[in-house]
Amino acid sequence: VFDSLRSKRSDFPILNRVTYLNSAFTSLTPRPVANKIAEYYLNHRASSVGPFEYLLDEIDTAYIRIATLIGSRGSGGSINSDNILITSSCSQAIETLAHALEYSDLSPGDNVVLSQLEYCSNATPWIRLGNKHGVEIRLAKFDPDTQNVPTRNFELAIDQRTRLVALAHVSNLTGGELHISEVSRIAHERGSLVLVDGAQSYSTLSVDVEKLGCDFYAFSGHKAMGPTGTGVLWSSEEAVCVLESLVPKPNYTDDGLPPYSRFWGNSASNYEGILGLGWVADYIRQIGIENIERYIAHLTAYLHDGLDHIKFIKKISPAQSRNLVSFLLPERWNVNDVADALYRNNVVGLVLGGNSFPFLPKSLLGNGAIRLSLHFYNNEEDIQRAMHILGEIAAGNY
Ligand SMILES: Cc1ncc(COP(=O)(O)O)c(C=O)c1O
Image (cartoon, rainbow, N blue to C red):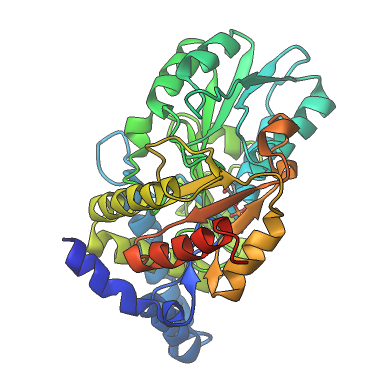
């Protein structure tokens, strides 16, 4: 199976030029999808043979492809794409939910529970909401021993006044997976909604929103091999009414109007974005998301092992991290110099600073961490190249 995945590497010609270990920041788009987007521009955009026929069918199919990949089902058990809202990014998906919640009956003294690991996209909307409405922000604490946020710490933070629990599926700092289904169960028992930030899990992990048990699942298109300027907010059938408070609810089913997501989301007219998201979902389906997940797990273990052989660095990712590993450097090394040395050798990673993680103690990230992240188009040689340079730096050769 790994061999057939490896053969797909040629779908990503950029990899001939660069060792790309930064997919958690933004990913690469496979040639078949890029070709389809070009084909749309060249032959279907504003076509005199009726662009709407093409668009309406293809857009409907795109929604269904996305819904299928995340297991969005209606009450009858069949795939339901009506609760998928296309946005311009994962950040905007989260922001949209925050705006929608402002229309609901939030009262001072209510609280929102977040993990201490949250990235700013899943922190600032809630801080703003909290300041404006007197809603308390509570944190489920990060545990430095396990490098993760234990479910127990959510249990301690959630109470009857919790309106929302918002947490990453996979942390973009540590790569650790949070236990969504357990947190969802606890939150629901106490009457709270649950938002999952799936920016790092969609396209790298097999995701089934029904099994996760969450109410909202937000993700990014550009981190998932899709077009830039795309994101998604999925809502459960029960929770979609929260979003409808933002949109004047037409009696769409009786009037034959499209579901709210099309009605609203399409007004942005990012057709190539929506179509591209659908084509990527289909590309992933053909390869098999379980195969992608398994291969990324293999590569991540290989990356952990490589880093274990580099002197002086300190990993801040749990051993079972998903699609990335981050590490701290000894104080005498400058983090930007190390990132530059990698870059000069054609290896692209990322420096992460404390400002992106508003709830983490500043001491945890010190002068910054380096993150190397993977997608299924990477291979062992990519990792070896990065390890070679880090090894040279550790040996004092830079
Ligand atoms: C965990 C997490 N959430 C949200 C985002 C923001 O995604 P987008 O660029 O689609 O807004 C990122 C991007 O780094 C992320 O890693």
